[in-house]
Length: 212
Figure 1 (cartoon, one colour):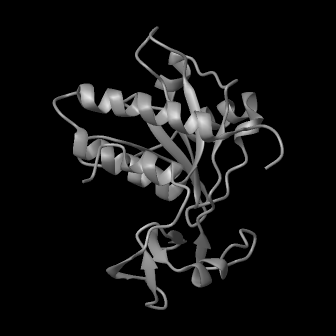
Figure 2 (cartoon, rainbow, N blue to C red):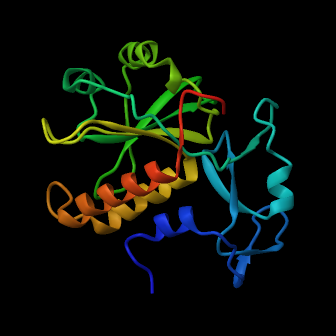
């Protein structure tokens, strides 16, 4: 039975599950397990499910390749701060978004969750760059395959949080929010899921700002 915390189970799982019938690598058609790795089609912005052998072909993030392997790196930035004014200047209508470097466009893009899934926001780059200047430890993303997930709780309720995640984990995270979403603001199930997700990933993640 699936639960609202499937993403958390995937992140904290120690082993690999057995292959399921019909689950195959999208490059070579080799049978793969339910828990498998992904590569990104850089130009098409598509995640592809792949076997280990195909995954290893694209792990060099500095190579000029059409595909890039999604790494398994999780970082937390406990010293991260952002004011409500800085967040408002990013023109993101909710208090949660993920940011990644789109190499095809040559710029950072932002997506925020909602009842329809991930929605792209036109990111004012000057405002985003001012945040990176104040927090240079955040400027460590591998283009296309890693993202910064930032949560800014309702005014005065808690401090902001910032995590570095694989891009596939971000999309799965937003997909789960879409399934849980109720009403105008998402409802209690979404808020409970956010609290659980950030607490679990923060506990598992290495501290950002040091060696990669």
